[in-house]
Image 1: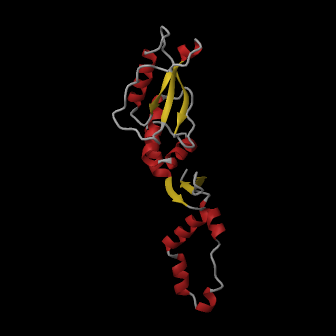
Image 2: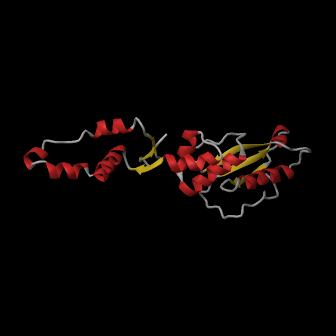
Image 3: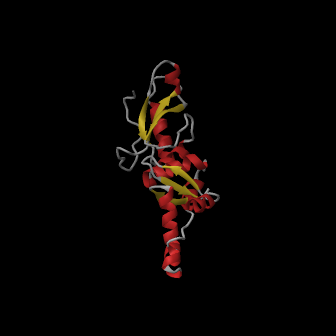
Length: 190
């Protein structure tokens, strides 16, 4: 492990903050592990500076290359070993702000840089406990059930129902869902 701490981010990290373990490849190739855990929910330049600080404390002369050997708290997002640190920081900041829904979007979409945050804001519809709850909320928001109840005689209303599965099937032509870790679903326009 590295004796000096890498450049500290200016914000406080939380125990659940996304972080990466950045290592010196020169040390690794020489048979040593030299690196450190770094808070990734920072500006891209801060993450680059942290990687440079790790390389600067290497015992290997000319240590210039780094790799991400591990990562924590990125949810379903998979951080690549040689992924651009600006991208890692952008994803981590989004996760720190919006949680697993952002991580899921980042993994699904492949959006990069500035398109990542903009794309998420445009794509994310919301979280529901189930797909059925999503359809029920939509029908309630549209006032469909109330409208049917108000416009049909009682004897007929008891025999009229909405094909929720059909509604969902039609909606999923334009929407995408992903399972959340707690059993719910995230809905996106992709």
